[in-house]
Length: 207
Image (cartoon, rainbow, N blue to C red):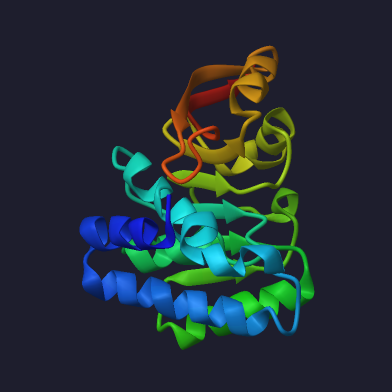
């Protein structure tokens, strides 16, 4: 997917105003690259395809999720969490243990005018205790599937939708997770990287 195709995908599905907001976040990311290694410098020229639209494609996959919080684990550069907050009206909780990135996420949310819906938790997800089970869990390049579920399952219930980009390892991680976790698993092909997959899981519980 080219940069133009990636940007058009967001515009066609979410409208020009939200595309413009995502672009503004992209500019914040590029500027912050001078201060910390949020994303690989080698990907700055393919920001939409590699990061922004790659994150945005999770939103349609959450179409059947219940109302409530979207929890993004290990948010790092705000991918996909900040992008999700820009493309939806959901409350979004970003969990990130690294202090410098916590500060970046809070400043980015403030600059983008979404700080009223975006909560940044400066800890590991194991320490986070939501008031209610979250509607959606996302995590991008955080941990192997079974390990991620173990650290996060206390934030969920059987109705939670898990959206987990996993690259080429998606199906093999699902196969391994089935030994420890029951539920419904599906691997959705990535629109930005055809050889990569996104794990979509529901009704998750330990065996």
